Every structure is written in structure tokens, then in C-alpha cells.
Length: 390
Ligand code: PLP
Image 1 (tube, helix red, strand yellow):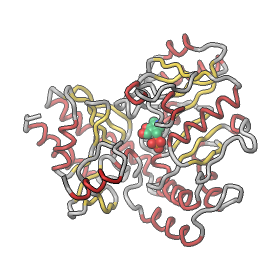
Image 2 (spheres, rainbow, N blue to C red):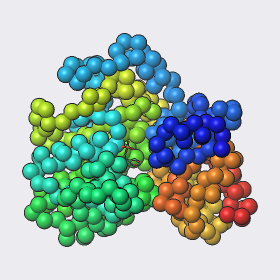
Image 3 (cartoon, helix red, strand yellow):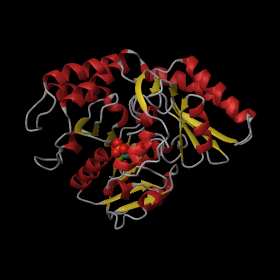
Image 4 (tube, rainbow, N blue to C red):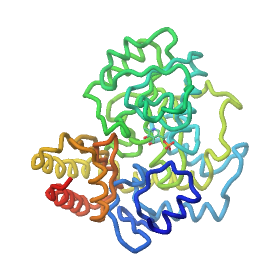
């Protein structure tokens, strides 16, 4: 074990299954370790670095803001917060924001708003979903493996299969406040619902007077080839949550709601000391501007198609590849065996990937990744797969 790993083990809670890499710098889609070795980052800190590592606009926004004002309380106004919320309003088509620090917090805020607005407490979520690690979001999560050992969970969540609107219809009762779904299940193995699913769910929610809440924490900000995945489904949720790519690498999240829904939150109903921190907001605004200026949402779609084609070619060559699926640059490759070994081999070849759901390789590179790097990843995977000793 390397010295840094020994130190880590001594001082830090053992909750992460670490890869043996000490990363020290990054630029675009490339990160470097302490030994100076470069890696193509197809992981992006779990779909965070969408504008690439250390995007110059994000870096200079952080530098500028951190020289002026790093923190103040939410009882005062700050310019970066207002600018960011204005940008979010513009790209979402009119939603208001509650700013927080992470995806789980954004979902917590959504759960509270749902209860306050509807005065009901039953939420229908999906099996195999992932919504965070706090107790409420863990209760919303439809995967027992994350919940084990943490009972009692929050009451009021029902889980139904993802991708079929009928079970949602059957589960709705007079106590149902909302339906909470990811547009594409990320941690669940890049599960894309069938065409028409979200239109049906949105119609159902409208008919039954139930709120539709979408968790865009992983899918947001161009990841799927749309600014927000719901825009590609042609629906409008009542509430949606974002984090991950929002801050260009800085920790920030937001719960966005239609104005009449957000108005259920009154003074003192929700708060966060760091939520909407000026430096995080300045970074997030710069990151959204970079996404727009560099047309990275469109690029995600184009590069996503290119990457998927390359992976599809591998699928036609290797029978152990069960499926290649996803949207934009959120792609999963399902294998018929556990994929951690492939992740390790890819790292040895200078590629960072991860494995979700046991046997799905997840590809979420920066949206501005160069085409040549994608080609290089496909060539390296072909080599790893051809070695056979899996
Ligand atoms: N929701 C989804 C869809 C996620 O993928 C994640 C994290 O992976 C979360 C919520 C939790 O976000 P965070 O880790 O920022 O709390």
C-alpha cells in the first residue's frame, strides 16, 4: 500500500472504496497523478466536471470572487447568488431556485417542499433509484443495499418499477403528494426508460393532481444532450433538483420549482448556512456560461453518438457485452460479468472509468472531451477485452 493510502486509512472514515491513485491536477478531460502520469477522465468526478477540469472561466470566477467575498449569511443579498439564480431561471424556462450544497440536500429540500405544498406525505419513487445518502433521500432511494443498517427510515415512500407508468397509477392514493424519478437512472446502471414513459407519467400526475419531481442531479447541465433531461422528454416537472455539474467542480446544489409551488416555502421554512455561497455561485454561473458559449449541450449529443457508436462496435465484437445504452455523454456498457476488473485494467492503461450496479461500465466524460480521446478509449477497451483474461 502506498504511503498516501496508509495516511488516508489512518485519518479518514473508511466509507469509500478508493482506487490507488493520488490525483493532483487536471485540465479538460485529462487528470494527472502525483507521479506525473496522465489519465483520460471518463468519470469526471461522477458526472461533475462537465466543462472539463479547471475550466479557465470557472477558475477565474473563483479567483475573482474569492478575493472579494468568500462567505456571508443568507440574510444578506449577494451578487453571485442573484446572477446564478437568474441564469437557472433562464435556462429552465422560469423556475425559481433554493440553493444548497449537494444533490442529497437538493432532494431533501424537494421532499420538504412537496409536503408543505400538498400537505400530504406519500411519495412514489422508483425501484433501483438513487437519490442520496441523508436519511430522507436514502428512504427515497429504491435500493436496499444503501439502506441496510440505517433503519428506521423515513415513512411515506413507496417504490414501483421504473419505466412503466401503470404501477405508478396503481400506487397513487388520496395521500399521494408526488412522484419522484430520475430521468435516467444513473447509479442504478444507466437505465433509460422507454419512449413515452415520462409523457405518460407527467399526464398521470396532472390528472391525479400529484406533483412530478425529477432528480436531475446526475443528468443535468447537458449530460444527456439536453440542458435538462426533461426538456428532451417534452414535459415540465413541478420541481427538479440539480447538483454535480452545476458548480463546474465546486460543491453546490439547487432545488428548482415552479413559482406557485415554491411559494409554499415561507420565511424560515428552509435554510442552509452555506447554500448559495458566493464563490460556489460564481463558479456555477461561469460554468453555465461556458456550457452555453461553447455549445457543450449540443456537443454532448454529438460526442455521445460518436462514443456510443464506438462502444456498439465493441459490442458486436465481444459477446460478453450485453448492452450499450444512454443518452448524450451518459453512457453505460453492461457486461455479463462484474466490471471492477475492467475498471482496474483501464486505469493501468490511463483511463478513468467506474462501474455501477456491479456489471455496468459508466462513461461520463467532460462534455468537451476531444473526439481523439474517445477514440483512444475505445481502442484501449478493445485491447483490454481482447486480452480475454477477465
Ligand atoms: N441524486 C442522484 C440522481 C445522484 O446520482 C446522486 C449522487 O450520485 C445524488 C442524488 C446525491 O448527490 P450528492 O452526492 O451530491 O449528495
